[in-house]
Amino acid sequence: MEFLVIGIIIAAIAVIGATALFYRARGRRRPVAPPAAGPSVTGSAQGVPAGGGGTAVAERAPPVVEAAPVAAEAEVLPEIEVPEPTAGRLVRLRSRLSRSQGTLGQGLLKLLSRDKLDEATWEEIEDTLIAADLGVGPATELVGRLRTNTRVQGSRTVDEARALLREELIALIDPTLDRSLKVAKHPAADGAPERPAVAMVVGVNGTGKTTTTGKLARVLVADGYTVVLGAADTFRAAAADQLQTWGQRVGAYTVRGAEGADPASVAFEAVKEGTGMGVDTVLIDTAGRLHTKTGLMDELGKVKRVAEKQGTVDEVLLVLDATTGQNGLVQARVFAEVVDVTGIVLTKLDGTAKGGIVVAVQKELGVPVKLVGLGEGPDDLAPFDPEAFVDALLQ
Ligand SMILES: Nc1nc2c(ncn2[C@@H]2O[C@H](COP(=O)(O)OP(=O)(O)OP(=O)(O)O)[C@@H](O)[C@H]2O)c(=O)[nH]1
Image (cartoon, rainbow, N blue to C red):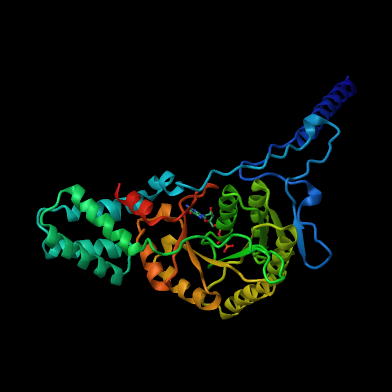
């Protein structure tokens, strides 16, 4: 009898164990939907070294879906996305400036529409501007102009105050600066073949360089350009994967190197590949580096020089985190000395009341803000337009 009971227990355990193993095995085989953040890639195409040179051309687009015996279990690769057009993006994203709207826009309007603009009010206006990171010089300049204008115009309604502020803020941001991105292919000339425009993305750690490079690829694709990405951030292991995922979403090639590879060689290969493929633009992401570390800054200079062995680097975009305020200006100065910055990308403007940094950084470098980051979404990077920006602040 005892043997019978033990036998039944053993049999029951065996049945339960076998059932559990069966369901686990089924669970593993179930095809996994690609993550919303980016497509999954087929194994053979992901990061395979090409020719042993330390760099690789990863995941040509459109991605190849390998034939699978069982349709239900095949990995489903998402279609190449067609990003939203860039025209009017700043208008679409204007509500993201809500913190700056409150501090800069509404704060100033309220002060300027007071019945009596006495010394104390002007001081408050100046303090508001400085608190929004406009910088002391530009703040004093703006207050001076507002004082002159209000003296001439006399009393103001809110609408008149808004019109005055709008005009002066736009003038301060300078709508005459050339904010276009130099991303168009160079045509063949003087016996030299055509070649892509090259843009490098630089900045300190965590400002949003890789994200911005990915978003910029989308901006360019949306505007009809073909793009190759160069993952010259060989320092942070995940950066190349991150960039490659961005590229795959819009069908852009990514050239990447082994972890720790010489970033200059990755940049060189990216330009070479881009030229061979006849694309319009090569976008090179670089590793975050502290502006205070001379060795890293020298390395950045080398990346640019080596990339330039195949033609000019047309854009050097410095990515600054708008929330870091005045520290961003110090970074900007050092980067500009090393790599001749041609444009500023201000990221994370959605998370700060300090929209005045746009003015401060342009004054500091004499280089225009060309793009602004207004969120973490793939199409939350907008070409900067002074009028749309000021209108958003004052709405
Ligand atoms: N809210 C907001 N977040 C942003 C914006 N741009 C980038 N980020 C976020 O900032 C974080 C850092 O972005 P990365 O692109 O990884 O930064 P990175 O400069 O490449 O970082 P390192 O390679 O470490 O130097 C990410 O969580 C991004 O989603 C923006 O405009 N708004």
